[in-house]
Image 1 (tube, helix red, strand yellow):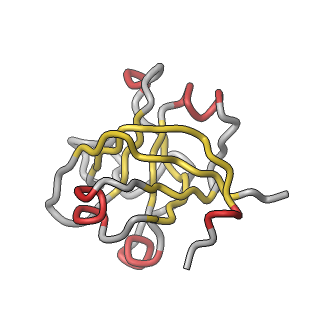
Image 2 (cartoon, helix red, strand yellow):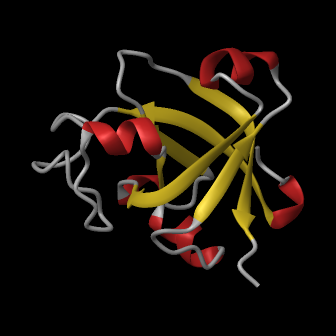
Image 3 (cartoon, one colour):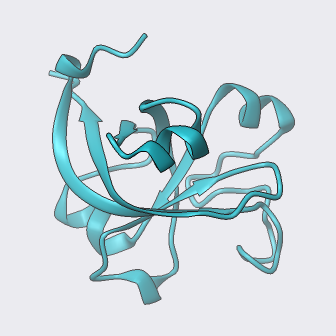
Length: 126
């Protein structure tokens, strides 16, 4: 269970999804920007999120940071499966998303979604 009091509010993002395929990544879809080699085990045990480079810099986020994505919207719970979802920052979005508050969640199946007004929280390591 997630204790939201261990996290610091970062802001609101629009959350979309991506799949580990060359048409949605680069020529190495199973290798994240952080150097993590994705396996089926990773996809079951760890949810990976990608954020735009400028957004990462502005909020001093780094690869390996644990984040929470959360929303009170009913479509979020039905899409993600719960109101709070723990993710690990392991990838970076294309620079064309710089200046936008977007997040991309790596998913396995054939789902596609775009969810507005998703809260992003950073695990407080202090």
